[in-house]
Length: 120
Image (cartoon, rainbow, N blue to C red; front, side, top):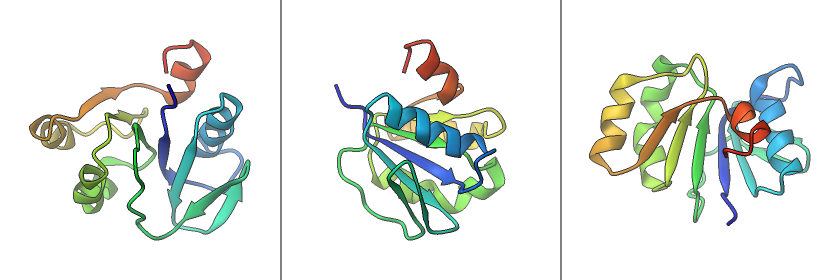
């Protein structure tokens, strides 16, 4: 099963975890989309700076702190993902409750660890 993933908070900086996550997702043949503040490309994945209504998103993996997430709650819910991953530093109990209300699964986990341990 292809777990099409949106990396939300993508960075062009190679030392950022979101950048490395895109590389690892692609290396695992997972269709990957990215949203960030600056346009660019990582491992042939274009970083969108506009909120695109992607179809069939399985997973949204967050790389934004909880304060910055609030502006995007409605957008993320509109994608109707199967799950949202809150990477370390992005934990957000308020958003957990909103996701629960919308029957969207979530987990506080590290995308990189999930990929490395075949738990993605």
